[in-house]
Image 1 (cartoon, one colour):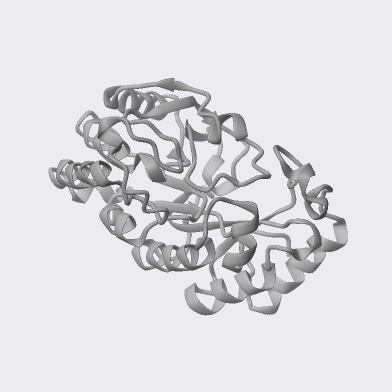
Image 2 (tube, rainbow, N blue to C red):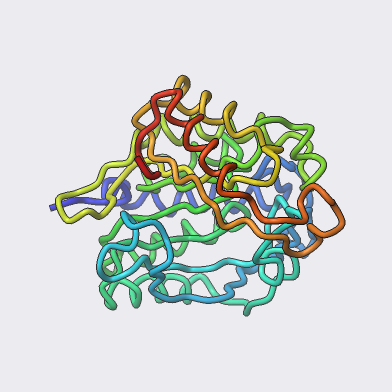
Length: 300
């Protein structure tokens, strides 16, 4: 029987949670390094308050097949975001914090309820700025019978130092790989160093859990699942991202090359973003990925 990583930590979960909580007083949880005192109510780029805010919690059947299985991925949508993409399709949640404040025990109970519903994993969406709260909740849930894998579903704009404190806790990392270079990211997000941070984060995630492992039932148990959103005109540098994944991580990396971009939020302010991607642009992305030996997560 599969045993999640966090089973091996036991009492250390609370220690990790305390270490993460201390960072909140001079917040450097993510590469923005705002250094605000979130415990005193100060707000950084992400806009997240001292207490966690959750938008929704439910079995999600729209995620990747290895996460969904037959019973869904137990998704907890957290509000606010440290990246603030101008084309964000969930801007009511990520930009404007649409949700309700909850206690740590509430998050623990959400996890246990999702497990009782038969979900194959607990999927934390946009967790970076709430890692202290999440680990505290995991410690409580684990003591009360949580035993399914944990998914860290992020924008890829993560601090290596924070990820190291999650080592041995998170089973499945599901980061975005959005932009191949900092300059492009700077134009469409509030991050000056997205690409540098994302590449370093992917390496740390891969070092911790390796390539995605899928069991005989077709359900993911451990590893890295990378998402890449193809955007109009190839502006995100897809081929450079695929080259990095294949050469710096593994050609066996699981990469979901996504076609669902559409102009949202403020995208209409940028003519180059004000359309959907074409069929040919998707074919070009698949071809570029195969060029470097990638073969998992997208059509053959």
